[in-house]
Image (cartoon, rainbow, N blue to C red):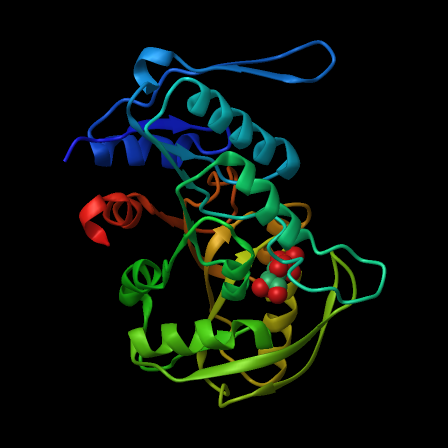
Length: 303
Ligand code: R5P
């Protein structure tokens, strides 16, 4: 199989290196600069693109809009340079949490981003652990929705004991917790959460047996850490052992996240490299690369 031309966006250097190594290629050398008015100017070397299958990797971490636009500019440059086909790898899709309108007057951000991505002329889009799998229905191009749970389970296994319990920090994470519990052969529980704002949540109770158990909290993403910190508080109130492991696909860890999770206290965080690993995490942070999972999915004979 001829490896694709790999174009790596500026939001994904870590995963870009790992994926390039897995493919046995060097990423295409792109030029990016900012014009004085803030516009992004991009150039791809046409000879490296013309007639090739091009894989574009870009995740949508902050600044989310800028990174999404960069992906579309890269895709447009590759299309105009004569790429035979374009495939996008967007391990973390920003705005996916805006998959429904909680109140009248709100936009449907997830739908809008999926619509915008159709301008990339992607033959196929690859993503990992979307906030809501139903968002697939909004994408024009076929979506390969990959699961990082088996990779996370592998990394967690040495830390699982016969007192471990997998916990969903909210109702949206129940299916994920159930699947991880099955992979680890452990029971699961769920915390009932209500979101007060983008930064704050409250918990309203818990379902499952957790007294004397060691929780493994699992969620699709950690943004400000509010959800997991609140769930940990609820679990402590219900008599859990003060020994928290967190597992997540997208460890954004923005705003007060590190401070909040340090206070839990977290014994270990296991995440993927869907977003650039955060520096200065004050507890052990094990980062599992998505490169092998993506390599398999991007191999044409994988379908
Ligand atoms: C929401 O339903 C998501 O699954 C996460 O629980 C949430 O987005 C995490 O955000 P934060 O870390 O800011 O609480």
